[in-house]
Length: 298
Image (tube, rainbow, N blue to C red):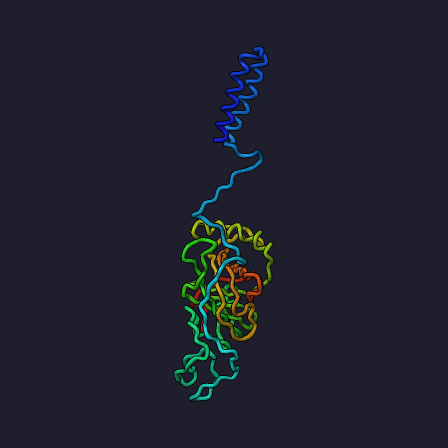
């Protein structure tokens, strides 16, 4: 509307000038006013140097790890968990979340009532296992610590919609010799190299591709270069850690964050980006291998 008013005013000035100005001066003025009018119409009234911003509401950006609202179920946890719990039937050592004694088979009332992970539920702290390493062949490990992950989701997209548990749980294990075994959905990772990241690192090297992947509803083939390799986005999402036990863990109970999983053939990158404010985690990048469930024996 503003553009049409300006053009109308210019037309009135040109008609008045026709009666009072000499022909050469009138033609020069008409050219100037015509140029101004065309420019105003093309710009649509937008101030010079300002580019209109458009937002596709169906393709929201990846929410910041620091601002996402997360609602977790309240679980009654004892203030002090004894380190030397014993089976009342045989006296063998048991875990605080054990529902059955692994030695005598007696049913137990767990001190900590937690859901079991979808995979590797029987792999406990202190247990030995063998893993087929993609480069080194079969390797022996011992479980030092265990984490229980809760998968999070939004009922609908939007910054005001909280993230809540999906009901799916997965486990991560600190191993000795130094390695980290992680299951997420149907994928299994044997991760060996870990280093901390800053928010600047994450925003520069990963978030542009994570946003592109999110905008395609995780269906696009999104490729990026990182540390002399070509990677493909595999999965992005959010999680919270509901339980931790044992030693050698890089995360703590209560940690909340988002993840990025990427692959380069059978190599794997696992990025954990945590909420600020002491949520129990250091932003971390793991690098290692994607393996098969059948490669894990215990």
